[in-house]
Structures are given as C-alpha cells and as structure tokens.
Amino acid sequence: MSALLVDVTPTDSRLAPTPRAEDGCFVYRQYIDGAFVDSDGEGWIDSDNPVTGTVWARVPDGTASDVDRAVRAATAAFTTGPWATMRPTARGALLRRLGDLIEQNADWLARVELQDNGKLIAELSMQMRYMAQYYYYYGGLADKVGGSVIPSDKPGIFNFTTYAPCGVVACIMPWNSPLPLTSLKLAPALAAGATVVLKPSEFTSASLLEFVKLVELAGFPPGVVNVVTGRGAVTGDALVCHPGIQRIAVTGGPEAGRIIAEKAARHMKRVTLELGGKSPNIVFADADMDQAVKGAVAGIFAASGQTCVAGSRLLLQDSIHDAFLERLVDFIRDVRFGSPADPATQIAPISTRPQFEKVRSYVDIAQQDGARLVAGGKPRAVPGFPNGLFFEPTIFADVTNDMRIAREEVFGPVLSVLRFRDEEDAIRIANDTEFGLAAGVWTESLRRGILMSERLRAGTVWVNNYRSTSTTSPFGGFGMSGVGREGGIAGMMEYLETKSVWISTTAEIPNPFVRR
Image 1 (cartoon, rainbow, N blue to C red):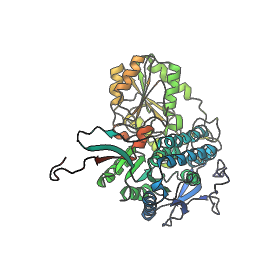
Image 2: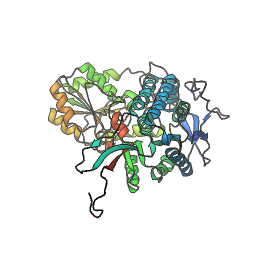
Image 3: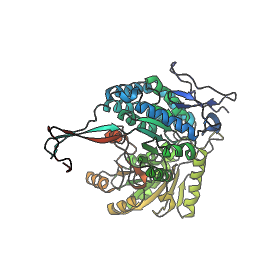
Image 4: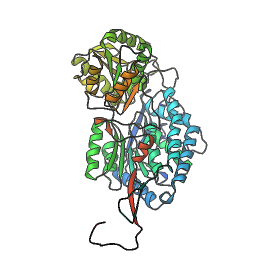
C-alpha cells in the first residue's frame, strides 16, 4: 500500500517541491536563517502515516548545535537585520501577506497535515482556511498596541510607557494540530516584533517545514522564523536552556510543561504553557437533549479525542442520566470510519503509535478501577487500512471522580460519565481536578448558565456549545492546564515587555543624593 493518501505537492508554482529519496519518502531539511539546511547530526526520524501505517517522510534528528545555529540566526535578525528596524505597520503588512498566501494554499496545507497526522480533511480544510485569520488579526494589531502617559506625582517629570518586543522566542508544538497551534504563537510573536525558533513534534514535522515556504514567500527577512526538528529530549531541551532564548511558548502535556517551566525558571525565562485538561461537560435536566448529545460527541469524539479541550468528563444530572446515556450510545453506534481524506469519514485514526497504545492502556485501567464499559473499548479494523491506528469511540459509565480515568488526560476517544444531583454537586465534581482548561454547560436557564460560568474554574466556559474558538478571544487555563494566554490582545502581550520612560522638564537637577 502506498504511504501517500493525498497529493502533497505544492499547488503554488512558486514553492519548490520537497525532494524524495529512492524509496519514495520525502526528505526534509531544517530551516535556518532563510534557507533549508542539513543538520549537524547524521540521524533521521521517520514520519509514519497513521492511516496506512507506513513511512512517508523523514526529518532530521536535530542536535543542540542545530538549535544554536537557529538561535544565533534569530538573534542576529532581532538585533541587526532589517527586522530590527522595521516599523510595526510594515510588520503587519507582512503578516497580512502571509495570511493571503495561507488562504491561497489552504487545500495544500490541509493535505500535508492530513498525511502527517491523519486528521479529518473535513476539519483540516476549515482549520487551514481559518488559520489565515490569525495573521490578518495580528497583522492589523501590530501597530495598534501602544503605551500610555502616566499622570506623574513628580513635578517636572514627564512619564510614559511603551512596549518592546521580548526578543527571541522558542515555540514548541505538539502533534495533534501542528499548524493551527503554531499560528497561535507565531502570529502574535511576529506582530510584537520578536523573532522565532519553531520546534515541531518529532511525529509531525513535515507540515511546518512546508508551511515555512509560505513565510519565505511572504517576504520575511532571513532569521526571523527558523525551524529545528528533532526529539524533545535533545532539540527541545537545548532550546529551553539556550541563553539566547528570552521567551518560551509551549503546547503539550503537563509533565513536559512542568519540566520546561522548571528549566526556564533557572534562567528567569518567561513561559506560556498550554498543557491540556480533563474538562467537564455538564448536562442539566432542562437542557435541549438533542443539542446536548451533539455537544457531548463534539466534546470528546471530534478529532478522535485528540484535543486539549476534550470534554472527557460528561456530568449528567441524575434524572436524565440513563436516558441521555442511551441516546449517546445510539448516536455513536453508526459513526463512519475510513480514510480521513474522505469528507464523509467521521472518525480518524489516533495520530501516533505511542498514543494509540496509551489509549488502549487506559481502557484496561478504567475497567480495573470499576468503571462500566458501555460502548467501544477496542481498536477498529477498517477495510482497506489494515495497519491503521483506528480506535472505537469508548464510553465508561459508573465513573467516580477518584478513578484514574476521571483524573488523568487520556487524549483519545474515551469518555467518562459521572452523575450529579444539583448545581452545587456539579460544581464540586467539575472543579475537583488539577486541570482547568475548559468546561461546557448545557441548560435552558440563563441564570444557571451565568452562575456556572462564574463558578467553574476553567479558562474557557462554553454554554450550550462546545469547542468554539476565535483568534480574537484569549485561550488558556488554570492550574495544571498552564500559564498565560494565547489569542486576542492578551496573546500578543505575552511577547511584549513594558518599558517606563521618565523625561525631566526641569532646567536643573535637584539634590543628586536624594531620590526624586
């Protein structure tokens, strides 16, 4: 079986196709200082297609010296290149030009991402087109964020604030949505005037190495955006610890986030960490049942549960528990498996072999802890794809909040169903977690919707919908779900430093031995 499900050749004639080896695999190189270059190391990492189970591409197994080259290039671009003197309005124009290129090449980007991580083309097509909005939004915002004049209490002093770009930023991305999650970091960082070294997951590096061709075509100066590939323990660690990095932005798991935060703290580096969750999706008895069932499905089975905001804990009020659970099981009984390149497919494969095995292990853990399996629970054999990493939508009932299946992030299509009595009980269960990324509430009561949104400890609360996002709105979590915010104006402020300027308007300095 061919490793290629879709054509990943660039549709824009200005973009050079990636070369292929004799065995047909695409061979990628790192992108440093405006050019695709070989790694200083000799190792390679195979990129498997999760649908066919075959290798389709190879990326360099990068080294610490590769990271050093990239950081030095980004530093030079920040301090001495044309980027260093470029005005915010000009930066904004480059970002908007990149947005145009993304729109023009959205179908191609979607196919590359599909080939790399197996996500549904129906969702990828939407995501890639919307991704342009990040660059339009921050392109427009680049020259709109200004300081302010401070009403000083000191006579003869004029005091005002400005914002300065933070410097060189390291962005570390996961494998589930490489390009959209890159854009959440890259667009505001560039709008702020920072330069960037991007480190994609070793499982899904190809789409970012293709995307950076658009960055070059848009006209960004060399060194402003760099891409280094490799394993987290090597290139990721080298980035976090490099003295030339001033800010670190990460999307990943809580354990990796904790390690990165500890290492960053030793060097006093600021961090933005989006680290996943165990989000409650709460259904009250007065909810519109048909819509709430769809919301429960969207919360956990969309993207095969491989999303940080997955509503993996479904809280059902006692009086509707049994009927709702029955409806939910019926709804997913006939979901369509198949090639993610087929728009009719509803369930895509798990993106990586290690994650597939993790999902399978949590099914065993849940049953050992006493949860009752009511749907799924095993891999799915899909005709035409004998080596595909497909897993059935899985539902556990009789779950209590002390079970591992209710407390630990599975990151797969596995749902825990819990009961609650009333609002107080729902709040108690929902907030009894170390995470706090997102939450959903389903109710026809406006009073209850507002009350729950106030009391739920989550960075995002959806009422009568789930997974709605926008580049204009801040996103982030409480507790182990991370630090800082991405999206909106808050997302750009993460890459700016506040500077206070004091100008004397007096002709003579008073007593120099006394602070004014």
